[in-house]
Structure formats: structure tokens, C-alpha cells
Image 1: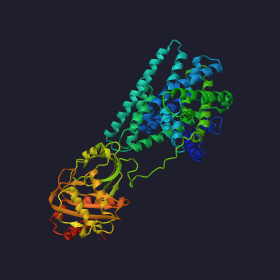
Image 2: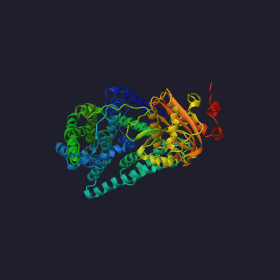
Image 3: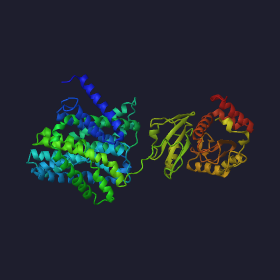
Image 4: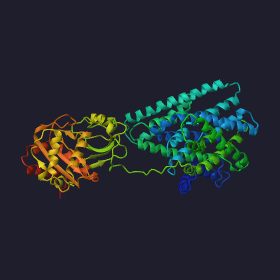
Length: 483
Length: 157
């Protein structure tokens, strides 16, 4: 057993190396996930580091914790007003689409290895979901901007399709291990997973927003820790009760991210950083877990299966699932190509390992190979494909706070100065308690000629000058607040 | 920028004659008629009135501070008026006003504009200051009251 000091030294060094490499490679556009896995492989027993690690159980635990943070952070940054237009097709992709992918791969694997359908389906289920962290990081890191509703569609899909893959995997493992179980019992399991996950996730997100606003903590640094523990509570309580914790935590993130609450920005930052750390740790661990020499034995089969997944299973599932929806054909082609696989399949592939399914090492190594090729070929070529299909939009320029502002952003939005009336009821109140309409903001408070950047907890005083972005449509409710 | 620098005695009216909000604003803006820094006085009126339409600048304690940004102005200009009769100004507290400070600034001078607003709103919140303004008999007297008050808080050198 390594001493804790040595363990920390190794861990810190690996994380630092990963971060630095990610920075260096930013311009090449190589998916960071591959880098992190690469560092893990290099540090492993077959690389330069010589660290022997084969604890699939530990890797699985690390992976699950990491996924919780990645999904929560991804949810927080999901813009619901943009996403809700595509929520139905996303939901279809995340459920029926995942099933179609799993079945197609399952049938192919059954034929290829001459196995039972269930074993094939297990394989298909494991690699049936697209990866939230890979899709988020590629669509959001700034190298790419997409036209239309394709970006929210893919983000929402990748954030919400893991529960289906988890369910299918666990379900097929149960059927394999205890053949007396029926498909019917699986359906009730499925409904429980989705139902509980949805309810606890939604309720938890709402409750969290309420509590963050109501609990007046003495110290600002407490807020992220509070949110962190509630997030873990949402995941774990859902999972313990038999629901899908992953679904719950993603939904909670989306709900919370689209509420107004104090310290929102610092909270989002905190979880963003935590998600990055989670990704690095997770992929490093998975890299360590892999013995690359073994992969060499699977090159042929691996490429074959990757090809089937990329060119047959994923496109078919996207095309079939999106039939009822209006998308251009080039958008469907693009969505087919952004079928990035990531950590979830690898983590799911540790389940058969731990549960002692026959030939589980074959599954693990092949799944790992497929994920690597998917990240490499699809991840690296997304920008190129987007341009080819003419779906790439010019990157939006980041703007500074609109202190100088003409009402060109939105026709009914204006930037005006408001003097806080001397005897107004807002005097002495915190901004967060005033319940301004969603689309109206105080962007600057000027008190005795000093500028204060307001937060929800800023207290207004008589004669403060507020620089406000207001939506003219809501002017009556704003007048009401100040009267 | 200081109030004493932008406010001059010719832009001070000790007895506003109009009684209606729009007319009062016009009356005060008409003080700028010979101001070389204003290229289009109608445009200035329009911007003040459209700002009032969004939300009244009557901020309580009998004081109103109609303000706007306009490209028809070079720099920042100010005018002040008071009346012995109450003016129905649709103020946020519903009370009439009798002290009115007009501030119009060039579009891109937002920072200075906000600072002046803050200074005026701070000074006007003082009871003794409003009282002595109301008692003043001439533009010169009003001007020196502003000057004295501004000296208290700010280094005018």
C-alpha cells in the first residue's frame, strides 16, 4: 500500500501534467478526454510510470462520483429556454434512440461472436449512450459554434441518455444472471428509475434554489459546499430508493441553473471546476485501468465494431428516432456523427467485470477500444464536419457589460438609470427579495458616486442610482416595486 | 465634473409658471434655447419625455430629476427650477413636486452622467438643503446654495 504522501504526489503530478497538456494541445483540437486517458496509460504499468492498477471496483466508484458532478455541472449550464424547443426530440433520442442503438449493436455482436441475444444486447447497451462530458466539452470549449437548434438537441440528448444505457445494462445483466426474471419486471424497474429520477431531480433542483436564497449563510464560501452536499444527496437518495440517480442529478442541475438565486455565478464556476477535475480524475483512472498491450489483440474486431456503431447503428437510430420531427437532413447527418462515446460506456463495462459475466474482459477491452476510436475520429472531426455541412456559425464575440447600450439587443430592452426614491419601500431591502421580472436586471448601483457591482444580497439605499436593463413590457411591475 | 460647472444662473428658474408635468419640463428645457452645446432642443425634450414615459423621475420629498441621454447635446447640461405651487408630476410616491433638476448628457458620457445623478440625488436627500433652496429668491442665491453644498462633500479646487 502506498503512503498517503506518495499517493498525493502521484495524483497531483498526474493532474498537473494533464492540465498542462490540455493547454498545449488546445490548438490541435485533440479531444482532451484522449489526452487524459493517454496520461493514465503512460503512467500505468505498461507505460513510463509503472503504476499497476487493476481495481475495476475502485475505478467504477471514481467514475460514478465524477459523472455526478459532470452531469450536474452540465445541467447547470444548460439554457432551458433554448433547450425546451428540442426537449421532445432529445427525449426520444435519449430513450428510443438509445434502445435502437443497443439492439442493432446487440444483433451484430450476436451474429459476430455467435452468442446469445442477451449477451449481445449487454454489449450494445453498454455502448448505447453518447457521452455528456465529451459532447459538452467539444460543443462548448469555444472551437465551435453551431447554427440552429442542433446544439441544444445534442447537449440535452447527451445529458439525459445515460440513465437509459445504465438501465439497459443493469437490466440485461440481471436477466443474464437470473433467467427467471421476466421482461415485465424490467419494465416496472424502468418506470421506477425514470419516475423517481425525474421527480426527485425536479423537486431537488427547486428546493435547492429556494434554500440557497432563504438560508442566509454567514460566509459566502459556504454556498458551493451547501450545493455540493445537496447535489450528492439528490443523487444518492434517488439511487438508494431505486431511481436513476444520474437522471435526477442532471434534471436538478437544469432546474437549478434556470432559477434565479444568490451567488449563482460563483456556484456555476465552482461546479464547472469540479466537473473538470472529475473528468481528469476519471479518465486518468480509466487510462490506468487499461492495459494497452491487450488492446492490440482487438484491433480488427474493435475497428469493425466501431465502424458498425459510427456508420450504421448511430445513424439509423438518429434517423428513425427523428422521423416525427422537423430537422434538415444535414442536421440529422451531423447529429449522427456527434455520437461521441465517452466515460459512461467504460464505467458500464466495469459492471460485467465486477459481476462476473462470462467473457467480461472481452467486453471491457472492446468497449474501451470503441470509445477511443469514437473520441479520436468523431471528436477530432466535428469542427470539420460542421463546416462541411455548413452548420458552423461564426463564434459570437464575448461582450463586456453593456454600460453603453442602445436598445438594439432586443427591441423592448432598454438601459436606463433609476434613482431609488427616498421613501420607497425598496430601501433597506436586498435585491434578491425584490423579485424583479426575469428579463430585468440591475447591472450597477452607484451610491455617493461610488460604483457597486450588485449581487442578490446588495441592500438598496435612498437615492442610489441604479443602472438597469429593463424590458419595457414589464415596466408596470417594476414601477410597482419602486413605488 | 461638478454641478457648479454645468449649472449656470441663466439655467435656473425660481418660479416655474406652468402647472402640468409636460409643460413644466418644456419650460425648463427652454432655458437651454441659446445653449451652444445643444444642437436640437426638440430632440432633447423628446428624450426627456420618453424617459419619463418609462418611469417617472419624481423620487419623493417633492423632488424630481428628469434626465436623459441624447446625441443632440455636447457634454452634459443642467437646469434647475422650483415653484411655490405643487406640480403634479406622477411621482413614484404619488406626491406633487416643487423642486426639479434637469440633467441631459451626451450618449457616451454614461459614467459622468451617473456620477452627477448620484451627487444630485445625495444632495437633494438633505432636508435643510431642500428647505434653503425653496426659500431662495433669485437664481444667484440658488446657485450659491448649490455651490456651498457641493463644497461640503467634494473637493472643489
